[in-house]
Length: 244
Image 1 (cartoon, rainbow, N blue to C red):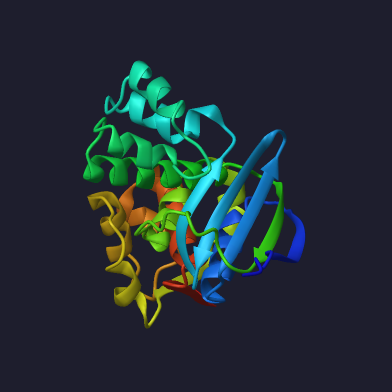
Image 2 (image 1 turned 135 degrees about the vertical axis):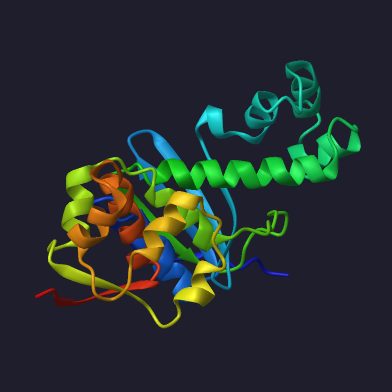
């Protein structure tokens, strides 16, 4: 059977920390294929199936599965070296680790999900980068992990530490924030701490940023910016007319 090669359908650059927009664009398009990213010497690939993020890998040594499992205390250096010697075109590292009994399947799944999360979360810190979008069938041996892409994007927003950038994205301080009609459906998909939930309770459709901060305390200003922007990106929040 003839192998269908992935088709390059788009390439370009992203800037202004807009990696999240690339992810959401492909999710909303129910995209199947590969998103390749590059910044300096770092290269990453994120795989989608019908708009779901199912896997990712990076050329960064610290983000390799074996390294992460060692750091988590799930694997030893000796075990990793032994397993790597048995990896070939027919057997992945994960398959070898399971076959040798070096790790339980549940621990391996958690490790792989952690790997993908770390790859994505670290990319949110990129202010700019290059990207290539390849549409087409995925490699048959590619793992298909159960991942919550919305949660990953929301968590990724908190990796950005540029306060002035958040202020520009959130917009005019007098703009009022209102929860979207689909807010509860989307918010239920997220895990969040009590502080995030507290910020959400202050969004009533009448308060602007300063009104929200006045109830939270100035020390929570930056966190509020991050939460508001994250909800805006996920279309769980909308901006309306300026407060009088």
